Image (cartoon, rainbow over all chains, first blue to last red; front, side, top):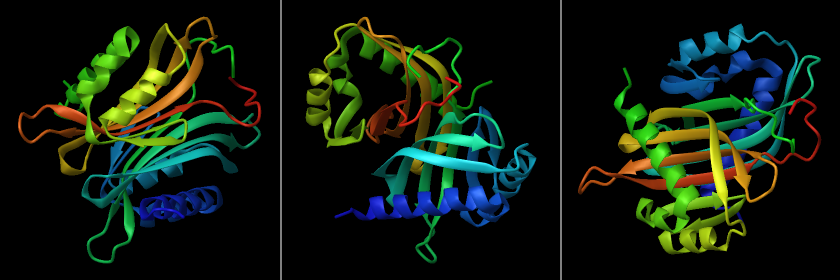
Length: 131
Length: 131
């Protein structure tokens, strides 16, 4: 048994990362002009700016390997998603990342779009000793 | 210049982690019966269950060292918070963690409570090679 917010979150996560890793220009359908993305501390708003940001990412081949996904219902029938995973870009060694989304239902057709998106690589100022 | 959501987020983060690291039983004032916490994949709802969970954590001395904090406004005048940091528990080596909150204003007095809370240690199934 999965609650609806878990089904929505899991379907989104599958679709998002498979699209990102295949052709990230197709992610445009998931963002709107309301969408906010903070990518490594740089904030962008709106689908156009977000797609520019994706277009400017320097890697060609990319694979997200998900370690843990968590979902919670939130305000306004939204779904909060947290992903912990490893990012493999080109020939670099895999690197830990965290990404958080708030998905919001589109009142017209019930589909969900990304209202909030925060992405962070696991880069600390000091060695963690355990990773 | 800081936008209001950033001020709210930054003040919350300061207060949350200094309280957690001093006396985590005092965090009760930040949660309500609506609050959801998913801690290492275990979901709890409501202030009572959340405080029980905190009480059951096995460490005595704890320190959260924050590496990066990101804030975005979200639905219903909420604030989305993402924290990347290191957790030092007792004599264990520091360990990477990510924590995501949605803060929601209390309509009665404008103070914010924690609607959503997701916590994950950075534990991957395979070595990352870079951390």
